[in-house]
Length: 133
Image 1 (cartoon, rainbow, N blue to C red):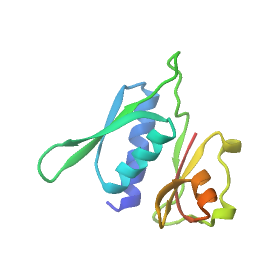
Image 2 (cartoon, rainbow, N blue to C red):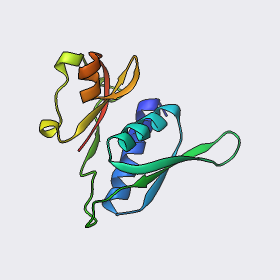
Image 3 (tube, rainbow, N blue to C red):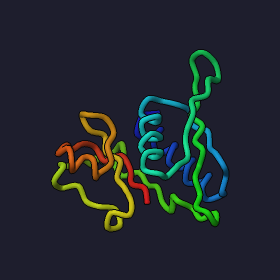
Image 4 (cartoon, rainbow, N blue to C red):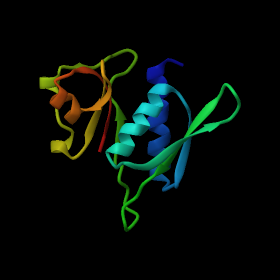
């Protein structure tokens, strides 16, 4: 499984868990997935995440999902943008906004993962991994 497919898998698991209003979801870990979880946490889409060691080689990320005061879903959509057959790149000045700035794009830049807002501010471009709203 290539890294982009594993990100698709991560997003699908989060989407399904939120749809079923689960408290948390577990995903096989990778450095990139931990970075995605970190961005989601910083942006307030999830409560937190932790790394669980299954055995010395295998780790999972446990993502604690977040809902509003009346149980409303904070992630109404999460979607892969760049795919193995069709990579999507953006320059800092070209990066579009998700639903007039209500959502975020997660962009893989030379400085690590950034939201579209951070990428514009730091004037860096990169591969558009996904959008969250």
